Amino acid sequence: MTDQTLRSRISIVTGGTRGIGRAIVRALLQAGSNVVATYAHDASNAEETRSEFIRAGLPGDRFLIVRSDVSKRKDVKELLKTSCAAWGGPVSLLVNNAGILRQGDFFDLTEKQWDQTFATNLKGPFLLCQEAMPIMTETKDPSIVNIASIGGQTGGPRAPDYAASKAALICFTQSMARIGAPMGIRVNAVSPGWIDTGIFTEQRLRELHEEALSAIPLQRLGKPEEVAETVVFLLSKKASYITGHVLNVNGGMHF
Image 1: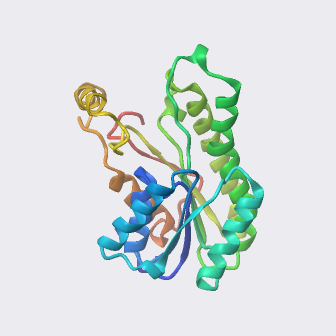
Image 2: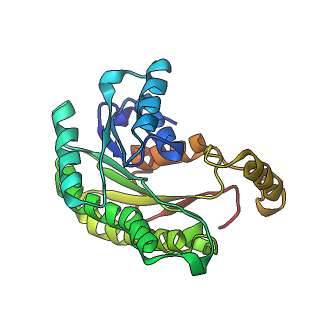
């Protein structure tokens, strides 16, 4: 679902080198956008993503993959400068996708893990919105999409820190929609359910496919591409009268 209005627009996708983030970057490139994708630590994965895009015929002069810790303001400022310098204009589209998810027993959850999860999942979007929104007003039809999670809507007993951060991100999205509206900036969220992102072991993936038959009305896991196309829709002018909305992409698991 591409939109010609995305052509040549400058986009930032945090956490854009794996899973859902990688699919979003690919979809934006296919829609004609110039994209900066960030990663936090895994340089080898970032290089693999770069090679995959080139093999797929996606133009190397329309995407950058940069290391950035979005929980640090100096990194966020540098990211915005890099994006502007690459294509000679301010960022117009922002996807806050970077996130930390570690599952385990609640009583083993450490303060350090709690703080790290919130730093990436919530402080990162806060810093990026605060720094990017004034710049985005210089562009036409600016738009932001935050990647939430079904865990933020239903709770997550194996990852309560992640679920809490995503619930807060949904509320933050609604706040940003109210703040962004007078600035001409739409802000929405996409809330994925169980998505086959390749991060699961084969055994866990088999278990999820079996569980999906009873837990998900559509009886299957979602694909990263299905989330990505939803993000592209919300960024585009096809969603020009939508802001402050949380769009569920979960096969009917929660609504």
